[in-house]
Length: 127
Image 1 (tube, rainbow, N blue to C red):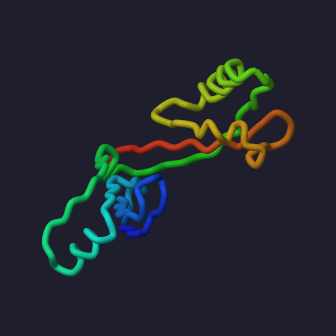
Image 2 (image 1 turned 90 degrees about the vertical axis):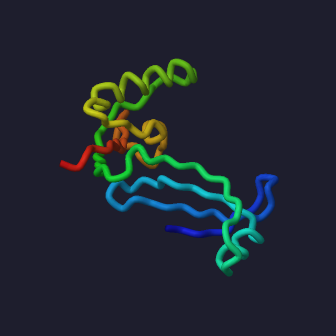
Image 3 (image 1 turned 30 degrees about the horizontal axis):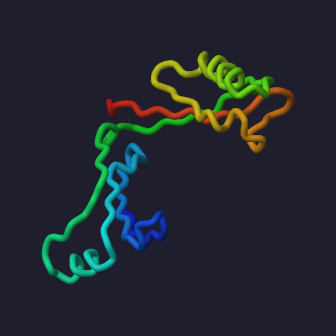
């Protein structure tokens, strides 16, 4: 669990509560509340309002990752580049693996001439 203070976004100062499942490495709960409501909650003044997002679909699953060398796009046209990225990732995005599209064009991930080291992720059930 992580509790932090956030600023900005036109919402002022808020408290952010995040809960992560260690097995899946998924943050499945994000809650936000005012500093005043948080103070009331932890000092025993009962239930306080919180807005939250709950994402339980991958909780308890095993997180896996791998890195593959993928062809970099050569087009400067945005639509053509997106097509080339999709085609380059397609052979690796099987059995639930999903590539990090940003790695393909991130120069920090480039590996030699026209290749990129791309991270792939998936979650599988515990057997």
